[in-house]
Image 1 (cartoon, rainbow, N blue to C red):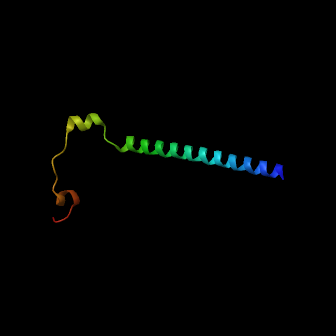
Image 2: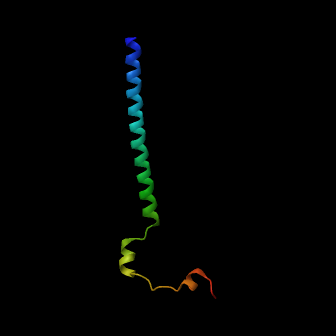
Image 3: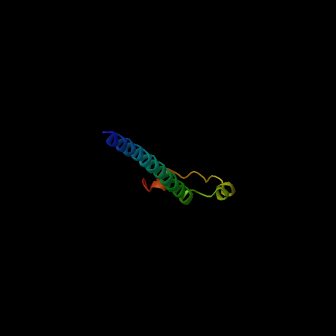
Length: 67
């Protein structure tokens, strides 16, 4: 009985460690993917500062309706 209790406790501990490592790796990959997407699709700060905001475009020109 003692051997069974010890192996069950060790199995539970190893499962908890595996869960923690999996969650940690998953969060790391998720943050890395989000950072990559933001850096690829986001405008550069230098171009945003030098060009400034653009002039407002009327909705019918932007969306192509009401012609």
